Length: 359
Ligand code: PMP
Image 1 (cartoon, rainbow, N blue to C red):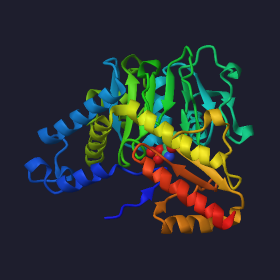
Image 2: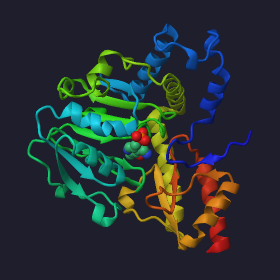
Image 3: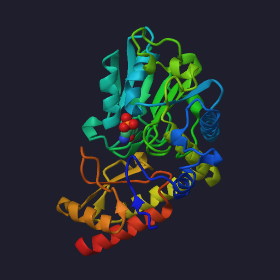
Image 4: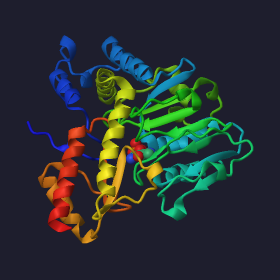
């Protein structure tokens, strides 16, 4: 079977090994006689799958006992509401950094519940950078500070963790598990699964236990972290198959050498691709080099009339999903953990050939 190289920003490529293992187990998991999809989420078999996946995730990021790890639904987008609902308490103010389209969505939703202080924004630079930390206009006593360490659309990534007094809240949807992370610096980390974790349908939240217990009275039970913390993320039927597949991805990551091994590989892949783009007069990336995302590489062609030809030829070469986000156009190669170095090499070779033919 010839699998294509998939550069989709999400739902994104999954490791071949994981897919083949899932295929083997799909109709009869470990001799039980049913698929994981057909199991009760309360069965001892599924509970063991869920617990093992949760433990493997904790191991990969060395998450301490002072944090809950929740496997939720509703996408990362639901977190834009759950965070203010659960973390504001009586505090009327939260700080937000605006570095792109996902920050903006988080801000828009938080405005329903509190005064949002946008401490810094790179909107006037077309989100091509991260505003200098020294210039952030932090509030005196915000409930938390929210930021987006990796902006999937703009391809902008923080190369540091901000040091602030308030609990730090981070949308790690597109860079979780791509490198090691000092979770103890955060109040809350969240990530939609469909990039570096597994299939869509699951959102992981890591939240420091002492931040729980102050949800607003009107918070729906399913939007209250405590509901999920108390029930082992099984207050209702969880997305069982996505949870199982995420577990297979975590085992695969452990076999690869964990997140530090992924960090090395991801750095190499990104350096190769940006290096090629920078050496070409035909392709360009607009992001300030220091803040270029290791995960999402947007690029433009010298002549945007060639975009559709580029995408058609790429498809024919089995290099899929290279169109930029519909809001910005151009191209984007997402090179998450499961996108191999071979895939990046193939993309670069294709881009070089295309430039020769059309440049
Ligand atoms: N945050 C970031 C950084 C994202 O990339 C995305 C999705 N691409 C989201 C939030 C929204 O995720 P979801 O579709 O799971 O709601």
